[in-house]
Image 1 (cartoon, helix red, strand yellow):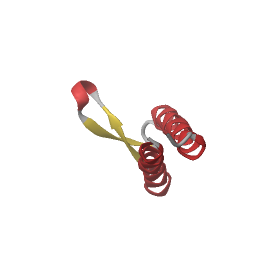
Image 2 (cartoon, helix red, strand yellow):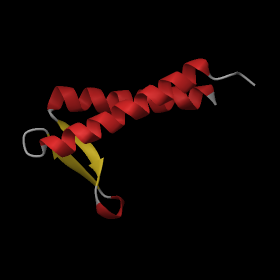
Image 3 (tube, one colour):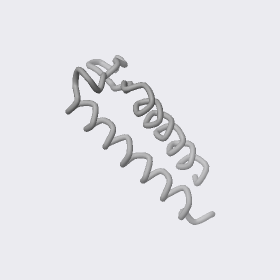
Length: 70
């Protein structure tokens, strides 16, 4: 379980790094389609998505580090 959360944190960390370095994020569109959200065109959507990715990264990291090993 611990590895799963750390893997989840790694995926969201990658998405955050990609968004900061390139100025665009992969976000889910309608009906499960993936689309690009650009910082210059849609700043509110970009930063809201970045915040939710950051929250998912933090939760995954905390649960991965502090989870009890069964």
